[in-house]
Image (spheres, rainbow, N blue to C red):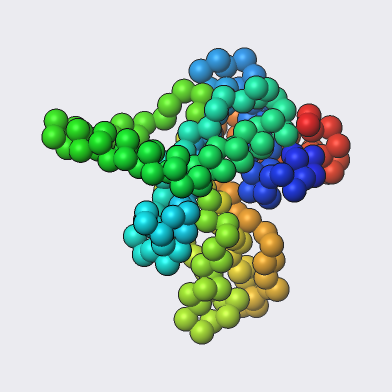
Length: 214
């Protein structure tokens, strides 16, 4: 799937996100101008971009929600993936990041002064991506229970993608060998569209993604 999405020019996460968006656009939102996904809003870690902003070991929540450009083709796996990657590269440029954070700081101060809060409601044509895939929490903090400790967290939402490493699985009283490369993906979708999405994914997997539009 990564090869179809752009190979080494994109990451596994870019390819996964692009595939989910492409599948939703193709099978769920093809005739819905308001819900068709045209861009992403990605939660990006900026630790280590510039020590004057946030060092690599910064403990605070050093993340920025970066809006991508609109996809040139919202039905192209590679175009979606590369557009997402470009937005991440752009934010991790120290000069751009410094200006973006200064702008955000000014807006947040204005909100506080006017006794307002950020509006976090769903924005038409946007898809939020918040991935923890690079962090294997179940192994990093297992309290000595190697491959027997699970991570649980609360909440996801419509058009809000969350990605984690797979938790260890148990069959009765026996722990199964752990899939260390697997991912658990969570987001909400309308009930009447859930089956369409899942069936499309199953079909693509069975066909080794040969009919996915690049």
